[in-house]
Amino acid sequence: MDGFELKEVMEQVHISEEMQEEIIMNVQNRMEKRAHKSVSWKKAAIGVAAFILIAGAVSVPVHAFVSNIVKARMESIPTEEVQEINDMVQTQETEAEGFSRVYSDEEKERYKKLWQEYKDGKFPENVIVQVDNAEDAPEGSLCYINSTGVFNLPAHEMTDEELLEIIDLQHKKSYAVSQSTAAQEARAEEEEEKNHQREIIEAAGGISEAEAIEIATKQMAAELGERAEGKEILKYQDGSAAVIILDISEETDYEHKGDLAYYIIFENKNDHSIYYCTIDAVDGRVLETCE
Image (cartoon, rainbow, N blue to C red):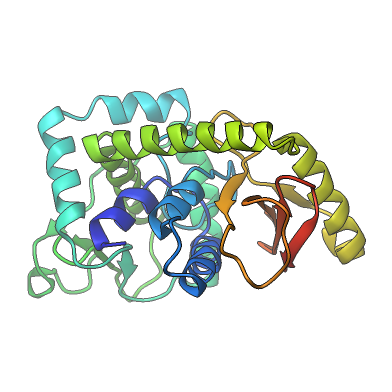
């Protein structure tokens, strides 16, 4: 998967940075174990990109699940500016945005609070300063470096205004990418593929996604005990439970009856702990779990 494709997929994700990286690495590792498979890493990543957490975001926001107030703000951006932002993102060498330093614990807490307030219409008074290259960055001031996708953070504790400017640009980037032709084609391709997979499962007399979720939930409770408390399945844009369907036809790590499996992810939004469960789509057998 090249940089363009990964940006295209991951700019649609609204999950914490830590969780985003862990999920992607988990799926990528599965794909790399069988690189010759017909199922591509791109398809798996697009499936992951369909997941949206409603709260607790620490990093890249997504355009698809926002308040009407934010939606209106995004849709008010001139078409030319939307195209310019998307072009900027696609030409960046990095596959995810970066920061010149880590957030302090206090900044992280205020970021989460301001993220929620942004959804309610608390927007920055100004827009973040953008420069083309690192050498153009004003010393000691917040700015975004277009060529590298890095937020150049000041050494001092950032103000609410500065954090809101970061949040605002993140929304604009996500919105711009989601409006691109490539993003729309990727979403249509993923939906078509998933419908085809569902038909295969049904023809084989397999279990439904709802049944798979029930099995995964019971497995998590039995395996984790008290640690399962607070963990909820990830959600799609419309609020329905999100499930990835994976091709496991050439999987050799475990026995499986069918060629497809449901891949279900749970997360505790408070401590960001994650639980994965892979279930045979034909006989409902739990094939693999990971905490």
